[in-house]
Length: 290
Image 1 (cartoon, rainbow, N blue to C red):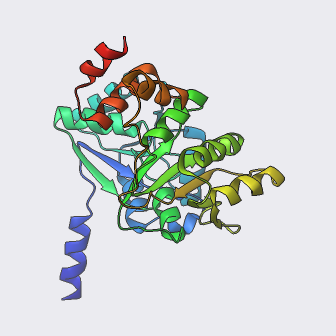
Image 2 (tube, rainbow, N blue to C red):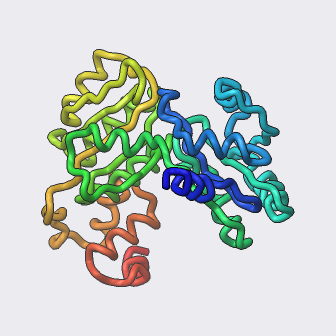
């Protein structure tokens, strides 16, 4: 009976030709790489990687030698076509990022879309995902959440994005680089209020893993005295259910739109937001505003 089960398991996990495999890689702890991921990396015809030098170190650690091609944001269009052509001709490919799950806040999503368009099979090999790890550590509600990835480095665009999330009731997850953390926290404090809870996670799965649970006021104060270190995942409490919207009933249309522009929104987005508040088509607001 055991031999039958093993044979069935091996067949189920057999690496197939003409297939793109999305292989999740460790975000810090190499022990998190699954046996199935190692099997796929060992058996595919080639590996597409965000940084081939970084990924080569991982494969060398595993004792795996495979042809590699780079696939990242600035070559994804040309290289994506090349990868798909090889898949159509009968090869198999494993797509990996520097750390975590491919296609999440990652150019891999374009390659998956291209494969879907061409009828090429895509299989995901699950594993580490920093956003989910941070969410589980946050101490905040996990039943409903949204992933926002990296906010724009542009101050106006960042503030506009946060303004749109002001009344989001789901727990929100963001990625942030250390050199942008202070500015992002200050903008979150303005948009969401200082009492909103936040968990700042860094060094996930590593020896010095940290989940700093505080409020936005507390986070801003802490990082005034302490320099941010490492890449962060920010998990922010959602707005209270049925939170009261800003009272615009006594505002003119122009004042309403201007209030959004003052918060950092573009004119186009401000008109759209005001129209949503008032329950009217955006063209109606645009005609009144101009």
